[in-house]
Length: 327
Image (tube, rainbow, N blue to C red; front, side, top):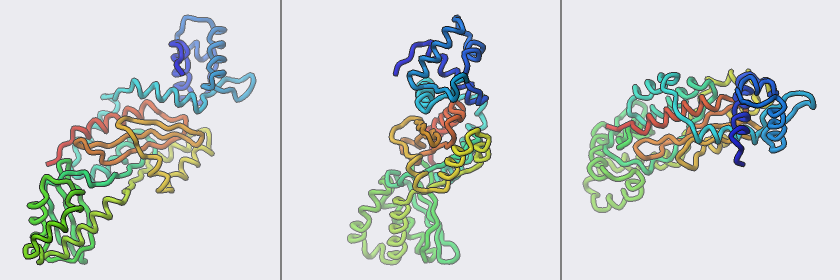
C-alpha cells in the first residue's frame, strides 16, 4: 500500500527507533525525532491511521505502539528500494573480500564469517551447482590414504575438492592434461554429459588413467547435486539481547536444521531480498562471480534487527564479488 510522505516518514522513523531502543512508539517520541511541522494531536491521528492500516499495534490500550510484521515488511521494502552501501563503516568488509584468493571454495567458506562478523547476526551460505562454470584447466594432485585433491580452474576462480581416488602421480598428470586439452572452454556440465562419448573415440589415449576419469566424474556429479551449506554463528549471542526470548530461540533452532536453512537462504532474483514473519526475519542475496550465481547468502535474526546495516554489508559483498576475476 502506498503511504503518504508524512505517514511513510513517521512509520520508518518509528520502526528505526524501535529497532534501536525497543521502546514503544508514542506521539511524543515521533514529535521529538521526526521534526515534523505538525501538532502532537495530528501525529497521534497519523499513528492511529497506521495502526488501522496494520503497520503498528498497541500492546496496551494506553501504551505506545510497536511494529507489526506488515510494518517491518513495508520498512524493509522501502529500505531496499533506496539502499546504498556505507563505504566508511564497512570498508573492512571490502578489504577482506579483495584480499582473498580466487579459490571459489575459499570464498564460500569465508564469506559467511565475514558477513556474520560485520552484522553481528548468524549467517548461512548455500552453494549452487557447479555445472555452469566454464573450465580453463584441471589439476589432479595425489595425496596420502588413496585420495586426490582436484583443482578445477574456471573463468570465475578455482574449485577445490578432496576425493577418494586411488591413483599414481603419472595417472593424475595424464588425466589432468587430457581433461584440460579436451574440455577447456566448455562448462563442467558439458564435460560430465559428454565425456564418455569422447572416451569411445580415445580408448587408447585414456585407457591408462580410465579409473581416475571415471571416479572424478562420479565425484563431480555428487558435488554438483550436493548443497554445500556453511553456517557461521558469530552473531548468535546478539540474538539473546532480543527482548522476545521465544523469537530468539526459534531463530537459533533454525540454525540446526540444514534443510530449513537451504530453503530460507534460497534467492529467486538478482537483488537483496527480505522475508519477515512471526518467527523472525532473514535478509538474503545472490553471490555472483563473473555472471555465475555461485551461492545464496542469508542473514538470520529477529524482526527487530538492523536491516539497514545488513543490507549495506550484503551490498558491499555482492558488488565486490561481481568484480572478482579468476586467473
